[in-house]
Amino acid sequence: MEEFDYKAYIKMVKEYQEKDDPTGWFDNIYKNAKGNYKAVFWADLQASPYLVSWLKENKKIKEKNNACVIGCGVGDDAEALSEFGFKVTAFDISASAIELCKNRYPNTKVNYLVADLFDYPKEWFEKFNVVYECNTIQVLPGDYRKKARKAMSNLIAKDGYILFSCRSRKEGEQEDDIPLPLSKSELDEFINIDGLKEISFLAYDDTQEPSVPHFFAIYQKLI
Ligand SMILES: C[S@@+](CC[C@H](N)C(=O)[O-])C[C@H]1O[C@@H](n2cnc3c(N)ncnc32)[C@H](O)[C@@H]1O
Image (cartoon, rainbow, N blue to C red; front, side, top):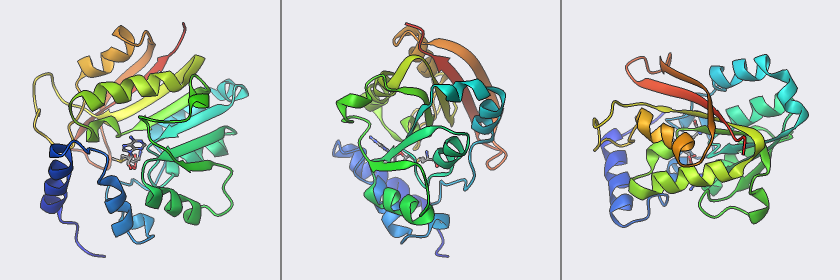
């Protein structure tokens, strides 16, 4: 497998961000993988263990069974939700990512779709009982992060949940990083601006990247 050129990657992301097209580059990553999901450098190739344990501990939730995976990448989290009995809509802005998922899981029950978090179908508004997001906000700059958070909250049905996984940073630190991890106060905007209730909040070190601290948080829409 070709070695991943991290410097070239950062340069490309910056170029797209500078021309105010911060989502224009994602498809390049999947296109360059040439249909090989193992070549997508950010893919863990397994569902989040935090998502899976929550699903095991909360079996009743699937009775209200619409789930959505945002920026689904190569599909592991979407497939896990489907295996737990959810009717899953999994979307990504990258057409190559969606094609890769469909080829990887030819018999899938997941509805894989090309869609943009900033412009998704109106029918998705408050439709989903469980929304899963992993590492999408952190690849977006500036106000796009706030817009993304709002768009995510708008997908959640009344009483529904968002499970949110991301790299973390301390307040005021790493502000020029790409990807830019989230601070606790950014996550708190789900509560303070969108009116969600924090159900759990975990700061942890990822087993696949032990040097990178992460957050895994769950919020519920009660109003
Ligand atoms: C860092 S990757 C994470 C992928 C996957 N969630 C994972 O954990 O492996 C971010 C994903 O979000 C997708 N994405 C970025 N902006 C998006 C948008 N506006 N709408 C939908 N998907 C988006 C990208 O194409 C990419 O697949």
